[in-house]
Image 1: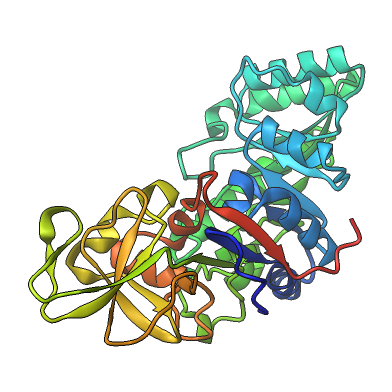
Image 2: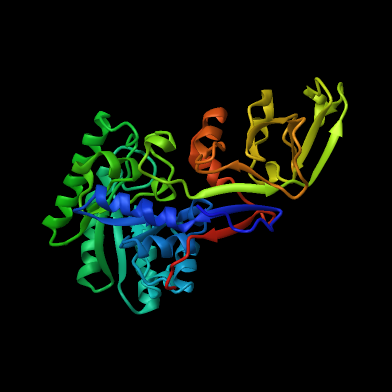
Length: 384
């Protein structure tokens, strides 16, 4: 990735060429299925609209979101590709979403009734995806409720109020490719789908997330729904050097202050680190309000790339700032520091942060937030 000019105080640089590359890898991994690029949570912190556009340019046929508001943002941006929204309250007003041709997931009879009410107000049939709980025990209808939901959906289709587009579910253990629950969930989905077909409906099936798209071709069915892999973060926890995916986000900022500090001085709150010698400290204007986890600063676990060298963050991570020990090296105010990125230049990666924190890289990139972090999009070529 070519660095854009570093004018912003702090920025999340999003490489759309990496997104396009990743969608290409995912399409090649599922040649018999369509690809739905999941852009919920503002594109996992990368920007739903630019990522959605890049994914479509790279061959994704669908986009997936969590909420009605997220779906409408895509429509208002001029994106006309099929969009599925899947997490709603039974008293949501679906009129606008139906009118905007947004596909809607339904997990209960009450949810279906609310969607159909929206279809009546919109004056057009709703496109629904019936979700069956195959073993994750989150969203989706229980098998005991499935027949009643199918009866309602079949009647709605006959009345011209709904088109049943799909039967779908979500995997619990896709990141463990040979886990027995995958086969069990796929079998339960197929039974539920067949019951819909037996009622005269003609839905597609979809089940596979990022990990299953890359590792389980037997559960690709008609459509795969990669999320984290679109952003280049490997769902199998392979390091970037071993993964076919390219991380799309780089978090970086400019050095706010450089100063020479004598030996024996405490640094940051609580003086958990004291200068063992005279040293140069660089102040970075990012903290936990911007998505740098406070606990990452404990025990000197955080590193940044500054001046071509990976250097330790010393002392606690504050709300707005962190301090970097530069030793006797000359660093400049205004110089760029990279907190995490693809790892191409030795900088920490989102996976490195996740490993240190005992979490997943999803949390790292979606945690980059706030109006103080500017999102800079690179990797043009968009026709939008």
